[in-house]
Length: 318
Ligand code: SF4
Image (cartoon, rainbow, N blue to C red; front, side, top):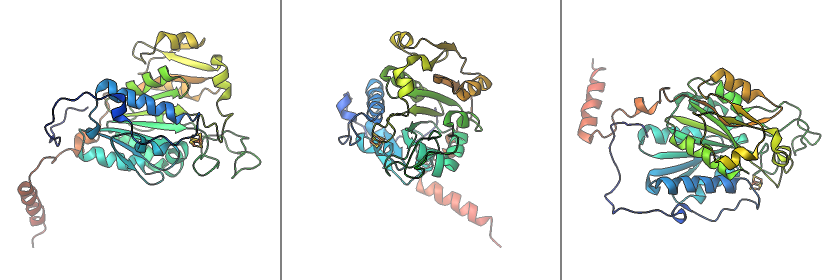
């Protein structure tokens, strides 16, 4: 949390201890085997471990399967419009920088209709975690080609197979102005997923986490090569990288030392298509966060607002 001068809206309450169940909202209605379940569990565990106050936490989403995320968290939530999770999250953060904000968005939601917001949210660099659930397809609307669908995959909109090369969300994000945290992980490795989201949660600024997310219903083959063959995964390691369990390290034979302060190196890793690189690609906590600007005026009284308004209007007196 950024150390800003701010008003504390919370009521005085007795000390509480929150269990995992205290963060569980409605029963998750994702398909059995859907990767979204694992991400939800990881976020709930991080909230429990850090004793995050549910009333000071907001989960924001757009539209899509993964965007049902706020319903399953017993926190505040905003299930918004298609592609609009990020402007809502930025709006919340601009006036309530004291809140913990998690954003759930999909490859269609973020990288297609929401792409304009994606670029600017990265530039605003407000302190939040953005989880891109990438299942390579529009799942909620029953299998249309998304920006990350691989060439040749047959969908309702491309029955003879997708034509265009897929967009690489990690590479794109690394190229946006003022990027401060980019990581890759996978839904099927709970320890790596947890370590990645935990580092993202602790980062000062916007943390962009690309999650390869299995969709057994519509794209069962999307990641089967990486799931079945750990040698197709490249585990990024560094003393300033993720704090992963040694069991994860033993699971993958291919490791690579990568300094997360090296943006050019991160781009080179993100572009590799011979392996799926997972780990922390880039981090720079010195980048400016927009809420340091937008928080000005928070906590002013109604009288102070009237004085400021009168002063502003007086500038136009003739
Ligand atoms: Fe998950 Fe795919 Fe089912 Fe949607 S359609 S809930 S992404 S498995």
